[in-house]
Length: 308
Image 1 (cartoon, helix red, strand yellow):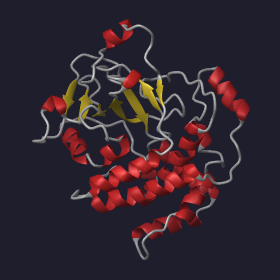
Image 2 (image 1 turned 135 degrees about the horizontal axis):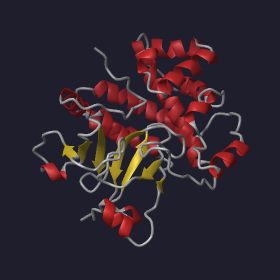
Image 3 (image 1 turned 90 degrees about the horizontal axis):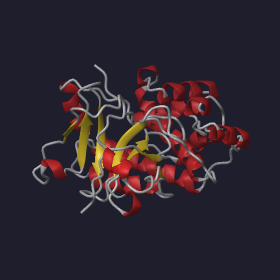
Image 4 (image 1 turned 45 degrees about the vertical axis):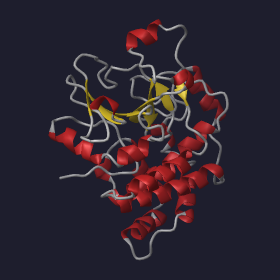
């Protein structure tokens, strides 16, 4: 049984908990497998399988990256020296390096013929670098309404592959906590979800998963990652006869102070759970919480949120 450490217990524990939990080198392959499994019988099965296909291309980009200019080592050094995210998304999306990953993704992904997906791919192929970067800027800044929804998963997939590659292949990273609890220390992007780990030195600890580079960083439990209060937090899960309320593998931490929520995956209840695939397959939980007046600050870069 996993040990649950609350804030006071963590602070009193001998030594500090590990700040980082980096994603595995086969991150995207694992996501693809999980999405394929979860797609069976799911109302969004076609979309989940499309994303699984994209994840396989992302894994190929991670294993066989395109030729691109290296990141400026002096900037990486200076950012780390001053405690800033070395792969700051708001800066790097304005530059050209990540565009090689988008070009490679568009070459390696085969869309169904005569489909809306093929039209979206054609739009990206035909766009110049300035337009592509403008779309990417709006995506990483959360302004989904300013770019065509059909482009979101392909832009998001290319950006994720680029930033995850930089994260995993930059030696001797020294990352420090961001300005807010939900800010990724590697790229400055917001968290997509949280994971309660259950093994080894990470047992019982909460790690937030970056929506862009998939870096995971430690944040104490029972604290809102948006307003940092602990009073009145509640944990909501979908009704499921297979799980008791306190054993559900997915629960949303809701805050009465700022009326926000964050999805949490409990690996002791589902060891194979993965943040992005779990998020995409639990949109009913988002709909329920929206109806109850909660807002979701956490983005998923492979899904454009619905509008009215």
